[in-house]
Every structure is written in structure tokens, then in C-alpha cells.
Length: 562
Image 1 (cartoon, rainbow, N blue to C red):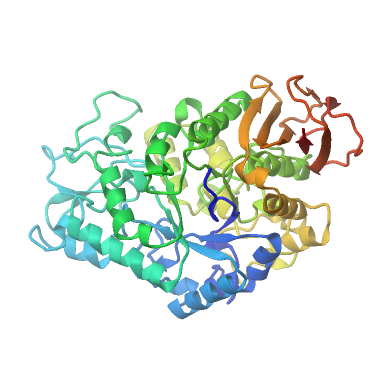
Image 2 (cartoon, helix red, strand yellow; image 1 turned 135 degrees about the horizontal axis):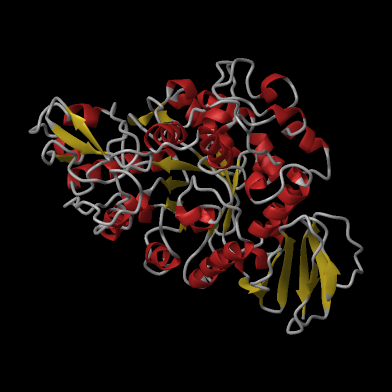
């Protein structure tokens, strides 16, 4: 397995609107990020992934970009951004920017031109189609509910938007548009950034016939059409061109966010010999608590299924490509609320989840607040939410599908993206030290108990545990490069696996329950000596590892030498 800096790194995602507000307007900003760089440096972070800070009307949290080469006023100026980059590099950390090129904002100058007339030179930068008998060109359903087509009165045609109607999809069939994107990427790389996280990059190529979905896979008029745009017909051609014209010229980290990919798909994108990207963000493990793969149809997750998914990704990519490892980001609910126990065993289960994830093969991603065990928030009312996906879903479910508002709110409590977007909890002062003003989104009231200042001062906190996980990764090559093998696939409470490199083996044992199951070391595992590298309970160093009872949400990692 080829050694690379990005395999050995730990990435921390900042959602700038919610990270730190420096000027009291209730919105996080770039100067706020600069204030907190030492916090990330102390934690041991190698790479900061910054969610979009580009100019945007902010219909979808900055993922609707109106100018790729300008900074949103609320976040600061390009000079602030340059200072931030310089301060990040000064601390020997790297910066990965978000690349959002499936769509722009409808306020982008390209789209403003495009909708002027059918013969405008920018018309073909987007996807326009005439209606069918007064209806949309096809029955495709948007990621954010409703149709993917929006009628435009000026030119009497519909434009495609897989997301919000304020996010028209770009037409990647147009070589001129592609070149504009490559020029923009080069501009940022020349400014000194260290990589791109590519937003929904595997949906940029569509079946240009835009056929109706015949089979009914969802209730209602509009149907999920992923088979016509996920891993579309020209996707690999486009990414090869992007690699040739831009990516291959820089030593950078690239990760593609890819809905609905399986490990075999991922290999085509990330194969170390001829792939176009370093790794992908896959979503399979994020569906274990969704009935029939429908996000809002919540069910308890099955640990056996979660282990099976993660193991499949570890084994299919083994020796050929590289995994990304994450349990949370700006689009997912808080992991301690979702996969752990955010009440009685919040600290233990947050540490356990971190251990289980960070000891696998791949690059770990930490989302802001995860390292202090921030939790989901039950917002008092739907009007307290800001996420467009959540608001659209609530409206569609209650008005069009006749669902009980209380049931819909319960799904929102479990899965809304706003759970991850509540402001970062820095200390126990007003508004959690995030702002001196009125925050753009509610602060979780548990901030007096859960905050970074308190976590830093407590040597047994989740923060210090994460810091140790990161230190171990830097000290032991086996954590980065060791081969993964699952133990006890069918156990309903214990998730255990080994990592092997030369004559060393890591034994990782975690308990995903509040019960106390017994772990028995398989007889096939032999060793001469063992050391406990990390654990979330106090353990006697001479404890027998052949068989031991696990405490609620316990995690242990042993290094075995043969």
C-alpha cells in the first residue's frame, strides 16, 4: 500500500456559519475561524475542510453559489480568507475547500444570462427543456421534495434542479462550461489550498433524454430518478478530464461526495493506479437507521448491518483504494444521539464511537463539536428550523401526504441536518460563547454542561480522548496501514475487528450497548505480548485479554506482538 500524506491525516470539518462569530451578528465567520485555529492545532488536526464560504444567497447553507471567486459578505473578505489560509499553513495544517459544481445559485451571473433568451451564449451552461403537454419534461423527484424541473416564464422552458429550485444544475455536456470550472479550480489551487471536497460530484452527468421513471418507487406524482443521473453516462470521462487539466498538477487531497455508490463504484473513481480521486464519501452506513433507504422513515439501527457495510467497504478497497471514515458532517445528525446514548452514557458512547471509527483503515473526518460530544436538539417547533430539506419535507409530508405532524417532527428530531448545524459550544457563557448577538440558529441548551472549555479542563473528557486517538494514529503505522478483519460478525452488541501489519496486530473491541457482554478472543489469534493503547474505562494493565466482560459502551484497543 503506497504511503501518502492524506492517508496519514485527520480532517476536521468546519461549517463556518455555526463555528465562531467574531463580530456579534449571530453568524460564524472567517475571523472567528482564525481565532480558533490553535484549538484545532492542539487537538492534532492535519487538514481543515471548510464548507462553502463563497458568495451565496444562502438558500441551502452556502451550497448555492453565486460567485465562485468571491467570499460571502457575512463571512468576511477575500483578504480575511487569505489571512486564514496563511495562519493555517503557519501551524502546519492544510486547507481543503468545498467544490460545488453540479449546480450554481440562480443568482449566479451565468444563470442570469442563461434565462434571458434561448439564444443567449450562456443558455447552454444549464439544462433547459420544453414542457410536455403543459407538464414538466419528466417526473423526476428532487433531493429536496417536489419536481426537479422549474418553469421559467421569460423563455417558456423548464430548467433542471436536482436540489432546490434556486440551485439550477450545470450542463456538463458543454465543454466551455467545463473549462470555466477547471479555470476556477486552478485559481483556488494557485492561491495555495490543499484539496477539494467535491459536493455530489457523481451526479454531474445525466441521461440527456431525461426519461420518465416508469416504476413507482415513491408515493405521489414525482419519482426518484437516481438511475438516470447517479454515476451517469459520462461521469468518468469528465473526472478524467478534470484530473488531466487540474488535479494531476498538484499534490492535494480530493474526496468526492457520492450518493448511492457501492464499493465497486468507488473503486472506479479511486483505484490507486488509474482512479481520478483519492477517496469518496459513501452513504451506505448512513442508511442503517432508515426503512427502505428512505431517510425520514426512521428505524433503530442494526449493529450487524452496520458492521457488514463497513467491513464490505474495508475489504473491497483493500490494497487498491482508500476509505474515508466518518459518522457525522453538516448533513447528518449527531452520532452520539444516533448510534450511541446521548443521556446516561454520552461520554462513554462518544468515546466508543470515535475508537471504533478511527481504528479502521481510511482517513478519519471529525465534524465540529463531535470531539466534545455535542448532541441532537429537539427544536421546539418547525419554525425554529432553518434547513431547506427539513422545511420542504415537513410541508410535503403534512400537506400533500397527510402525515401526522407529530410523527413527522419525530423523524426531524432524529435526522434533520439542523442537528449538526447548531452553533459550536465553546463555553458556558451566553449563547455558548459562539456569539454575543442573536444566533442564526438556536444554540443547544445543554451547552452549560457540554462545551469545549469544560472539555479541555477535564483530562477524562471526550476531547482529550479524541486527542489521544489522533496521537496514536501518528505514532503507530499499523493504525493507518494495517489490514482490517472483522471478528464476530453476528454479535448483536459487540463490534470487534483486528488490524494487521507485519508481526503486529491491533485488537479493537467495542460495545454498542448499555449491557455488559463478554468478549472471548478467538483461539486463532496468538501473541507473545500485549499493550493496552487506549480504552474509555480504567482497566488493570495485567487483565487477561482472552476473555473479559465489557462495561456499557466500552472500547478497548490492544497492540499484540507475535
